[in-house]
Every structure is written in structure tokens, then in C-alpha cells.
Length: 350
Ligand SMILES: C[S@@+](CC[C@H](N)C(=O)[O-])C[C@H]1O[C@@H](n2cnc3c(N)ncnc32)[C@H](O)[C@@H]1O
Image (cartoon, rainbow, N blue to C red; front, side, top):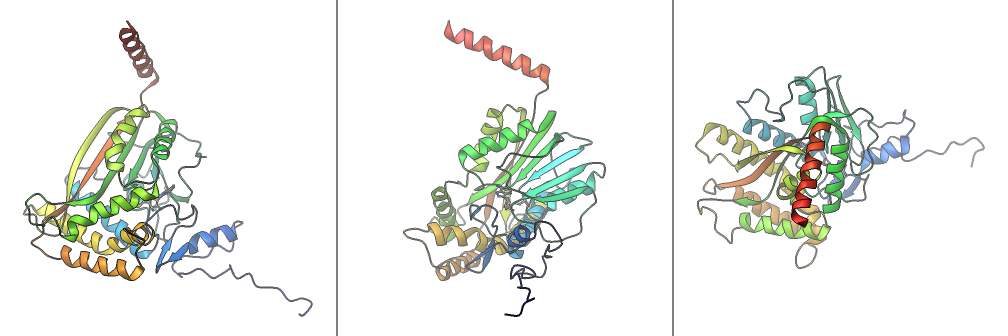
């Protein structure tokens, strides 16, 4: 070996995908590079910050899915002055989007409220994209203690189901509560399996009907259930929030609805499904499929059957979705709440 030979670090300039800039100029080169590379499995890339604990890929195909879901959520709120959130905030100043994905929501909120600082945080760095100057996207694990110093006036989450265990959800809502200023708002929008059908146009043995229970069972085995939509309101209440409000939706899949707004939503949701379903199924079925983990090829066949059935215009599928928004009480309200609880406790013990 020559005296002055400099060995090449194989981790530098070896990012999987040129679309993601390598961060060789930063002080955290090795960590940053490995985060960009993620973990490759069955042809898909997964985040590597938490060891394979989030069951959906973080790659271009999945980012396309998030983009479609964002558009779908916006179409479902078309007609409102603010289609991004329902919390009654005219002039938010510090906004946080937990599990921001590609950052679509955070970027649009930053655009709509140029005086606000909007942070988005995710396990995987979003693809390099144009960003308004008041939007900051960060890579971090939201279950860890938060280091942001300024209190937020709005904390938002969307489609975070299967991200956390039951106890972790409580921890997340507590962190939200602690990091909101008094009077600040939390808002969450969730949609999840199964696929629903109200008019019998999908038979009970159709893959469109069996897909949902299949996914729900697999997710149960991970300890991170597909149930955020069902647990979020109670958990938000338990964390101490007040003024809790809800809005339920039906997100059609396909252009079958008569109503023009729902038809557009259905067409976008169809694309959402086409790009998303492989990512939703691959990890769960190859790890936790019934009766034993499935092979990649079996999953691909399953997905092609699912896609074929989705393309049938006679099937009137939709997904249930729910939005909840709630307020952190002001100190004087807290005193009243405590006094009421004490009075109730006294009554009960008499
Ligand atoms: C289904 S995606 C939704 C993305 C985005 N909220 C949207 O609606 O477009 C869920 C996101 O949550 C992120 N996530 C899951 N667990 C997380 C954690 N512990 N900390 C930060 N982000 C997390 C995932 O990486 C993924 O990008």
C-alpha cells in the first residue's frame, strides 16, 4: 500500500437515488447519508431512523401517494376558505406537522400564512423540493422528547395510523398538550381500512372486502394498530383538551359518485390507491401475512388482483375518514375543570 494512500469512505456519494442530495458538507455526514439511503427491502425503501418500525415505505412511489392523499383531503374541504385545517385560528404563528411525509400540508400552510413559522417533522427526509422560506422540514422521531422551545398554536397530524403503540399515542398527545400554548389547537385527520360499500355492489368474498380485515390483523401483530381514527378523540380528551369537535367523511374510491365534488375526490382517491396499495401491503404481508409471511411475488399477485377489482366501475367503494380538532384550555378554565372534578369526586364518595 502506498504511503499516502487515502482510503475512500464508501458511504460518501453513494446515495441510492440522485434525487436526494448527499450531505457530505455537513458535520453529520455518516448519519445523514444513511438516513437518505434508508433500508431497501422487496424493492422498496424504508426509513432507517427507527428500526423498521413504520410499516410503509419512504420512497418516490409512496411520496406520490401522499401527494394524492393531500389533494384528496383538500378536495373534500373545497368550498371552505381554509381547506387545510378547521381549528378556528385566523393568524397562526407557530405550527407543527407531525409525520409530515413529503411536507405537502406544511408547505401549503406556510404559503397560506406567510407570517407563521411552519415546522414539519418526519423519520425520513422529504425529497428536495421548493419550500417557502417560513417552512422548515426536519428529520426526527416524534416519540422522543421534543426539543422545540417556542410553544405552538397549532399541532397537526394526518394519516398517522400504525405509527405508534397505544401507550405511545398517549405520549404523543401529552407532548402535543405540553408544547401548545394555552388556547392552542391540536388537529388530526385519519382514514383507514376497511374499504366500505353501502349498496351491496361489492360482494362479501371480493378481495376489496377481505383486504381491510387482512391489513388490520397484520398491523395488530406489529403492536401498532390501524386504529387511529377510532382512538384519537378519546385520547385527545384524556390528554386534557377541551372544545373537542369532529367531522366525519366518506372518501369514495373511483369516479362512481354523482356529486361532482365527490366524483373528483373519487378520481384522485383512485390514483391514491393505485400508487399506494403496494406500499400499504408489502411490509405487513411479507412480515405478518396469514397463515405465514407471504413471499414478495405472492404480494405482487395480490396487489394486481386488488387493482383489477378497484378498476371495476360497478364497485362503489369508499373509505371512512374523520377529522378531530380540540383546544388546550386556558389556566382559568383549568381551575374550573379541577374544581368540577373535585366536586364530582366528593359527590360520588358520599
Ligand atoms: C401515511 S404518512 C402521512 C404523511 C403526511 N402526514 C401526509 O398526510 O401527507 C405517515 C408519515 O408519518 C411518519 N412517521 C411515522 N412514525 C413517525 C415518528 N415516530 N416520528 C416522525 N414521523 C413518523 C412516516 O415516516 C410517514 O412519512
